[in-house]
Structure formats: structure tokens, C-alpha cells
Length: 289
Image (cartoon, rainbow, N blue to C red; front, top):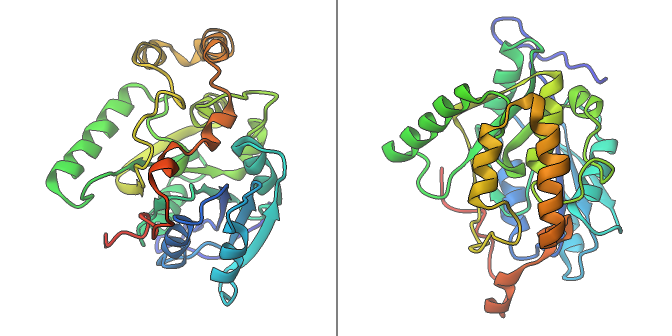
């Protein structure tokens, strides 16, 4: 595992990050996401960009946008097998840092995102497998948003081995992610791969949330019925202890998802494009500061 010689004020090791960003036909959104990573107060060591078969010019756009960046190592990959699971698998295999930040292609990450994540991993001295960022769709600095995030954190403390965020906000200790088997269809080939992976990750350490660790997904997918569980399934997940989550995912939820056709390729569907005849500028590069 790569070592990092940068220290925090109290002498704890400040971990280095690889950002792993898979994308598929994200021409209208991805530059805003890239800019949010480039503007981090403590930038990642490397960014691994995985084109998952784009046909809209996204791959060339990404290369052009990052062409002159010198301070961060850029790794451009192609994963022809369709599906986010395969793109993540390819990107993580090429990462070289001890910590991995997963990135969606349509999400804004505030300038303090990696700085705070590094601090949280460092001060807990190896006991964490994951640090998790909460999604924000409004003003993240408002009293209401801060209160909502604090309430979710309090709720999470009651269900420590459950996930309360999606793949847009997951940061992993690479060693734990690999020990858990990483992202692979041999474990899970359906939607909600971000929740299934946490069932396995929790076997190697706990996760941590912080009120000020947030990110802003675009919110463009208004109807999520084709890419997620229903209310009763989510409620049962919250009631299922970690020791029984293997049954929940690999028997109960798998059978239900198969019956509804909720395989991981559903994540590639972009129904909003029918109402967007022209390319729009990225919503991920919002004016949030």
C-alpha cells in the first residue's frame, strides 16, 4: 500500500486520496464535477476517469478539460463492458493511494470535501473503513440543512451498520474495500450497489458521518422508482441487523429486484434527456461556496 508522509498538526498521518470517477454520456454535467475536484483545498494525488462506453463526446471532453493539469496525476481509462460496477472495478484496480473517493459525474464537491475527509480518517487511526458524505439538494449552509444533516447523523448512530448515503458520497480505506471484494457482479449485479457494498465493508471497520461533510448531486433523476428500492424494502433494511443483511440482500432483495428487472444497467438510463434537446451547462458547477 502506498505510504503518505504528510502529517496533521497532532502528528497523525494525513491520508492521500485517489478519486475514482466512472462516467457514461455525461457531456452536459461532467466538467462541473471535474472543476469541483480541481478546486479542492487539499487536492487528490490522482484522478482516475473511466469512460464506460460514452457516445456523446464525453471522453474527449474530459481529456481536453484536464489536459493542462499538472499538480494531480490524471489516469484516463476505458471500460467497454457496460455498467457502473465494471467501471468502478476497473478504476479501483488502477488506484495507487491508500484511500479512495468515489465520484459521480453530476455531483458538486465543495472545496473542503477532501480536507475534512482526510482529517476524519487520520484522527481515527485506522478504525474506519469508510467516511460518508450526506447529499444536499438545497442550500447546505442554511440552518435547516445543517439541522437535517445532524438529525441524520443522530439516526445513523442508532443503526451503525446501515448506509445513509449513496455512491456519490462514499470514501473508502482501499485495503478494506479490497478485502471486502470490491465492486463485482459476482456479489451484486443490481441497483443499490452502494448499499450492498457497505454490508461487506462493515465487516472490516465502521463508517463515519460528519455534519459538514456533504456534496450536491444534480437531482436530475426525478423518478427513482427504476433505480432504487421501495418504501417497504427500505424500511425492512433499517430493521435488519447486520448479521442478517446477507439474507436481506442476496435472497430477499435479489429476488424482488430480479422480478422487477432492477439490474445495474438501469443506472445507465437517462430519461431526462428526452426533455433536454440541447446540451446544457453542468448543474454540478453550482454557485455554492
